[in-house]
Amino acid sequence: MIVRILKQSFWRQRGRKAIAFTAVALGTATAAALANVALDVGDKVARELRSFGANLVVLPAGGGSPVVFAGRDVTSLRGRAFLAASDVTRVKENFWKNNILAFAPSLDCVARLRGRTVLLRGTWFDRRVALSDGQQVTAGVRSLYPFWSVRGEWPQDFGGSPPDAPALVGESLSRSLGIAPGARLALEVGGREHVLPVAGVVRTGGEEDDAVLVPLESAQALAGLEGKVDRILVSALTTPENAVYERLGKSPRELPPKEFERWSCTPFASSIGYEIDRALPGAETRPIRRVADTEGKILGRIGGLMTMIAVMAAVGSALTVTSALVTGVLERHVEIGLLKALGASENEVVGLFLAESSLIGLLGGLLGGGAGIWIGRRITLSVFGTPGSVKSLTLVLSVGFALCITLAGCAVPARRVARLRAVEALRG
Image (cartoon, rainbow, N blue to C red):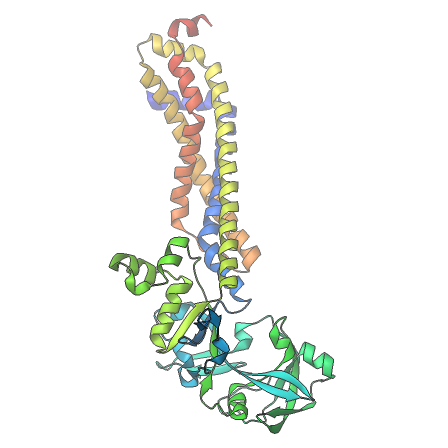
């Protein structure tokens, strides 16, 4: 009997029901598309942001901390600390190795060029290295800073580069001294002069624009610091760190076991740094706060924007459903009065309207959820160049979202049905 009444109701008011169904489907499609994108966007946006450089720096333990004595900063009086060059690959040999996307060591020293003091930096450009398990990975500034632009050629990079290996000259330094690719530099390091060929001119937008870059082993040999590096820059895929974990993460050994496990199994910058420190005894990993904080703000704002659009779509759909169902109640007041006059209780009549709304929500949720998943994949493809993955959870959430929309939209009509008296309805 109920099925028959529902079929007749949908047929007689097919225009109203179609409007409600369309509103639910569109609202659900919007929410499903945003949900499907949101489930992928964190990693994809984080990977895009990782193309802008390092977000972690590995320093010698205590080497990056200021030294204060009697209220005065005496950091400059401290002896220079180093990391072992042989330990560089260990940043990729820890629990979070799959989150380490790129890394490069560096060693800085002071040089004289044409009577001017310049920064001489040794680093890896594009080096193939082997990890302890035999895996081959590519490391260096080319993968760490893909936006760097070189006029000329990148120097060939391999272990054991000679002191006179080709160099890169920063764009600002090249412009001020008139240095072009193919020129030869007479660098004075430690009182000795060395002539280096110039492979190219690099534009970085940072301090490297005023520096001379050489292979790491060349800088070590020129400065007499064989086997040593100042720091290791790391680009890691991380999750924005909330204030609680940021506070607790400063002393991970003091966390309660459950809290420590949760913290250590989440790719926060601090938890990844903790694992790197464990892999490199005598090292201290620090987040580059300006980069990490910016990433967190960007991801937070994207999430907030998606939530706002989804809420607006839900409110718009619910209002449309409410309007369509209220009009339907007004058109069917005689039918409602007749049902009550024949003995149907208020709960049974209201239940009939809820069943109609639930059916609209179920069908609209399935259609809108499927359309939303397709739209989400197209959005991800157009923005990031790769289609998003299909999340089965999205379809389940879409149906639940659609049911919530229709039931919320049915609240006002259900109250009108409950208050409608049989005598008043039959009198018109």
